[in-house]
Length: 262
Image (cartoon, rainbow, N blue to C red):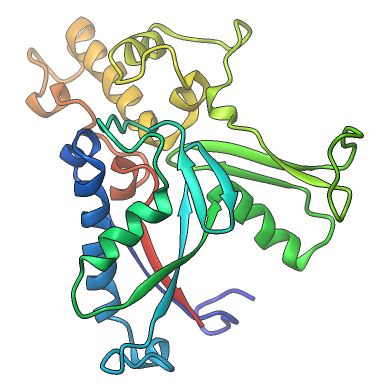
């Protein structure tokens, strides 16, 4: 049900842009920032979302973590980071458990007891949400800051056994590349100057994190070669990533939204 007065699920949320400096910092700095913003968000929650949580009585509150970086998930609340993507180039963190890193950051926030209870990929979460309402939903697709997809595989090899006979395949199609994909000089230029040249080609052509920068580069070239804005190129147009194509959240990649539902 939609519309401002017909919502079945009530939700409070806040979109938080992670400062660009943290994309190149340390994992502790990144997760401390996330933990601090989560606590700030919780303090602003309405009373209907705090029901059953007695902070003074030190009741532990559970937190779900959705993350869009490639991970090796070994349990419902354990995931080893394989690689930073979406513009992140942090010196450490690869090979570590993202749940443990966030939990440590939450533990450093005094006065609140919060347990990171579950880890789920955003693409799988999208499909699971749709499948909850419709059993025919078999595919989840993310078209946002990044892009990704997953699907339910029913024809499993004999050596792979599951209770349902099915398995969710997480595709990581942001890394897809083919010579059949049309690539402009702007795509090549942006890729060469990125923090991960040669990687995640499809994502750089379609993800909202990059679309604004593609437009800026096109406008800058038009300004230089065709005097689009007069005799000089506007100063701001020379600034990388000055144009955002998905609001403030597109600066940050994953891990930027806090929400509570009832």
